[in-house]
Amino acid sequence: MPGFILQARNIRKSFGGVEALRGVNLDVGAGEIHCLAGENGCGKSTLIKIISGFYEADGGELELNGRRFSRLTPLEAISLGVQVIYQDFSLFPNLTVMENLAINMELMDKRRFVNYARMRRAAGEAVAKIGFSVDMNELVENLSIARKQIIAICRALLYGARLIIMDEPTTALTKKEVRSLFQVIKNLQAQGIAILFVSHKLDEVFEISERFTIFRNGQNVAAGNTSELDAKRFAFYMTGREFADEAYAAPEFSGPPVLEARGLSSGNVYRDISFTVSRGEIFGITGLLGSGRGELVRTLFGVQRPDAGTILINGEPVKIRGVKDAIALGVGYVPADRLTEGLFLSQSIGRNIVVSSLKKLSNAAGILFPDKTREEITSWISELAINTGDYERQVKTLSGGNQQKVVLARWLANDLKALILNGPTVGVDIGSKYDIHALLRKLASRGLSVIIISDDLPELLACCNRIVVMREGRIVKELKASETTEARLGEIATGVA
Image (tube, rainbow, N blue to C red):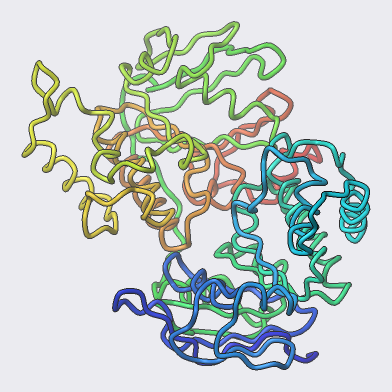
C-alpha cells in the first residue's frame, strides 16, 4: 500500500446536541479507490464536508499529504488536491462546457478580464486527461447526466486533484453509463489520483473499490479489503440487520386479469405490446434505456396515448386519455425521479401523503376535516414505518428511502387496483430497499397488482413472479423469475441471447 493521502482520526461533529460523527476514522491511500459506505444519516456526508473544509470538526485531526490539520478551509482543501463531486455536480446549466470548466480558474486568479482563448486551452487540457470528447460550446443543460458528471470530473482535474470524493456518483446512471464511469475512475487511478467512492450499492462497491470503510450511526463498524467482504456481511455492517433471501410467490386469486394490454403500439417507440397482470401478482418489465419500457408504462398511466391497441381493467376495455382517467380506474404510478416528479419538496410530509385523496378528506366546500386528515397521515406513517418525528416537516428533509415511502403512501391512500413503480428503489439504502421490497410483497399478497420497471435485475428476481424483457420497442421474452438468472436477463436485454 502506498502512503496515505488522507488520514482522518477520531473526528467528532454534533449539530444542536445531536452527534453526527462519534470519533470516526478513515484512511485513503495515494492512488487508491476506497469505498465509504453506510445508510443515509450514518455520517458520510458530514465527514466529506469536514474533509473539504465546509464544516469544522468538534474534535479529531486530519492529515492530508503528510500535513496535520485540526480544521481546514475550503481553499486549503482545494490547494491540497481535495475535490468533491456532489450528486448535483455544482455545474452552471446556462453556461457552456468550456465556461463551466474554466471560469473558476479565472475567478481564483482574480483576473479582471475573461480570456476565452486561455479558458478554451485550459478546458481542452482537462478533457484530454481522461480522453473525453465533447463540444466545448454546448450548454451544460443539454448534456446527459453521465456527461455532466464527466464535466465535473474534468473540472476537478484542472485544480490538480489528488483526492476526488464522489458522493453517490451512480444514482441517476444506467448500467452502461456506470461502466463508462468506472473506466474513467480506473483511468484516474492510473494517473495516481485517489478516489473516495461514497455509495451504498453492493455490486458497485465490490466492482470498483479495493478497500472499504463502513459507518453506522456516526461510528466505524467495519473496514478492510473489499475482496474479503461478501454481500451478506456488507448488508449487516450497513444496517445491523440480517436479511433473508426470499422470493415472492403470488397467491391464487380468481377472476380476470386486473390489467391487460393488447397490441399496444406507439410509433417507433414500442410496437404490438401484449401482457396480463393478475390480482396479487408482481410483474416485472426490464430492458435497456431506449427499449420503450418507460414510454409503455407512461401510457398505462395516461401520460401519453398509444396509436393502437387496447387496455383492459378487470377484463373490461377502458379509455385512459389522461392521468385523471388512470387514477379514477384505480391505477397508481411511482415515477423514477421522485424529487422532480413524485414529491412537493417544499411541502410537509403530511400534505404529500394526502394530496391525492383530498376529496374523501374534505367537505363539499373543499375544507379538510382536521381530525380525519391527521388520522389518515399518521396511519400511513405507521403502516409504512416512515421514519419521521413530525409529519409537519418538509418532505425534502427525509432520507431517500423514507421519501419513497411517502410517495407510496400517497397512492395507497387511494382505492388502487394496480400500482406501477418505475425504479422503486433508485437512490435508497440497503435497509430501505429491503423494507420497500417487503412492503410490495405484502401489498401484493393482499390482492394489489404490482408492476415494477427496473434495470436492477437482482431486484426483479427477488420481487417478481414473471418478468418480460423489452428490446427495440418489443417484448422479446417472458420468463418466470424462479426459472431465470441475472446473467440470462442481461443477455436477452442486450441481444446476446
